[in-house]
Picture 1 (cartoon, rainbow, N blue to C red):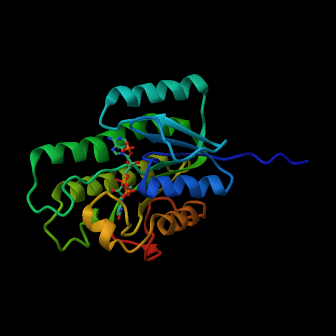
Picture 2 (cartoon, rainbow, N blue to C red; picture 1 turned 90 degrees about the vertical axis):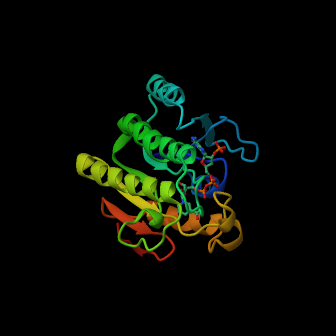
Length: 228
Ligand SMILES: NC(=O)c1ccc[n+]([C@@H]2O[C@H](COP(=O)([O-])OP(=O)(O)OC[C@H]3O[C@@H](n4cnc5c(N)ncnc54)[C@H](OP(=O)(O)O)[C@@H]3O)[C@@H](O)[C@H]2O)c1
């Protein structure tokens, strides 16, 4: 009988919001999921194919420990999904230094250096997905709010582009806008978000497991390519 290989996906920020729904989506579809959050503990999800590991993207030590563990156990990934992200200045008008720093530490510096280490563990032919936002699009921007959050996602978009150029013929890269989703990332989202976490995760799963062209920036809600 032909052996069916279980594929492994790593999802950062798996404890709540989109990452949590995405974790359940991949598990339901037979994947092995390695999830991360800052405590390394998750109460509401137990599954034989699920493992939760500690990762704080604003703390270099946890990123390095994470990499060591991957090397020791020789873990290989089919898909890496950089989902963890924060938005402490979402819906505020004036940039403020502390939240600016926090945002860049997690959404940009942490995500970039985590990916630099972890992309070695992604199989050739595998995928690297960055969960960004249309709020980072220079082309579409008509607003003046959420300066740090918007700029952090613009920076992440550029990193996706650079990864695409560097990893051409090795891994497939996509940048995703997950829609306006009802999560606790900002007060407005909980009230006005157009998608539930399950709806967003379902569409993300379908896109990520499809054959997309490397370097694409995909809007999950509109199901189209979107402007950088
Ligand atoms: N919701 C939306 O409408 C929307 C729209 C566009 C883009 N996005 C993007 O989608 C992604 C997920 O957003 P969400 O709305 O699901 O957010 P969320 O509900 O606030 O979840 C964020 C996740 O990131 C983790 N996290 C927070 N700080 C971290 C850190 N320092 N290091 C590592 N992990 C950390 C959290 O885990 P712990 O707190 O347990 O550590 C949590 O699992 C983000 O990148 C966000 O920018 C969301």
